[in-house]
Length: 285
Image 1 (cartoon, rainbow, N blue to C red):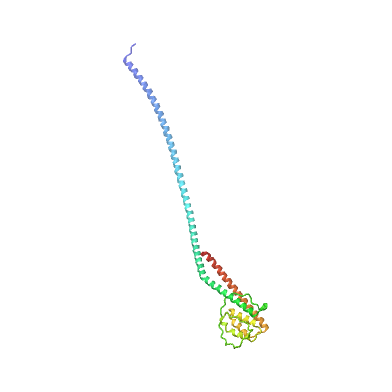
Image 2 (image 1 turned 180 degrees about the vertical axis):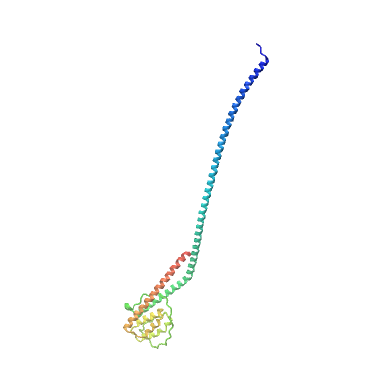
């Protein structure tokens, strides 16, 4: 049976419409799937963005906290360092003051050494002269009294610096020939008592009963620096009794003991001064 062209055309169109509908349906499902995938991807990206924002905010907050803590620590460290620097400045100032005092002490010690050392040298020379003088006095006493009793022996010779007493003015002694057994008289260290020598020699020429005792008294009088030394020398003009001789010996021993005490005191002061000068010499070295 034959079909008309119209029928064939309509069938062809129906088949085309059916294929187009199937194609459209497939494209619609594909578009819906892609849209769903895009929505899922967008939601995931939004979630990641929000999480990233939260993380970045947390990181910023942590960084701010760390910066604040670091600034606090830095301020504390600066305060500690300022305190340490202030303490070091005070220590340096104290050291400078101590150094200044030490320099002043050193300068004072050097001045003391320059000023006191010549005086000590003069005192030492004077003490040496006194030692020589007292040794000569001992020799004279031994010549005057070859076999002295223990009570009439002089004490250990002191080292004293004698000062001359007031001058004496006496009339000239009588001129008499001196016997051969006249005991020697030690020349006095005090030139103001020199006029007494002829009187004492005159007494010895008359045969004085106690020449060695009065020689000791005269020697004590012109060697000591007591203001009564001229009076002690005048005692040589009067012959004493035995009791007076004992008293005179006691007085002589007392005067010698006083001289010894003065000597020990002066010697201690001289040694102490020399010991004070030695550290300054070591410091200057």
